Length: 183
Image (cartoon, rainbow, N blue to C red; front, side, top):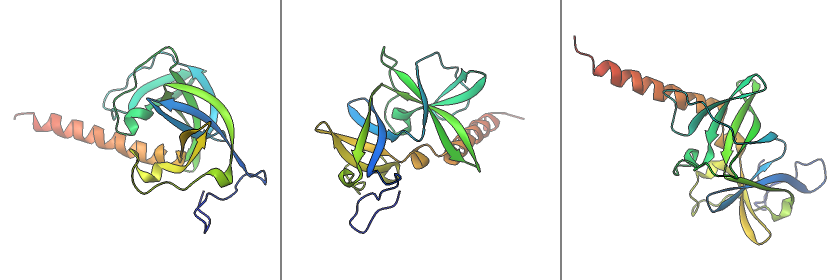
């Protein structure tokens, strides 16, 4: 979404004036993602690790025959890896990239609820004071008196950027391995 002249997120909701979002927690912070990106939320299941991936890609899961990469959102945001707890779950998202939609799982500490957020209650992303890259933030609002960061899923979980980062890790690994060889 782009900003109106008044700095607010414009209506892109079919005229309802609200954003429908799923709220979730990572550590002690609350986040929200538009329900349009969420395909389903599943209980945590064992994730198969994949060698030479960036640290924030925890691995893959089998979702009814489809191989789905799982991103540790906490690590993606430059924080420690998420600790697996009883409330840990995986949100399966449909993300646009490379002229197609891809399934991507994100590891969450817990899902809270589906909320309707009035569009005029969404403030633009601050240019400072958050622990996230500003382009990852769609906006900020409050739900039940608590700040909620609305994620810009297309930026924070860009399939193209994630692929490029995985390629960089692989190149660095092979570069290090080749540098260690002696003739």
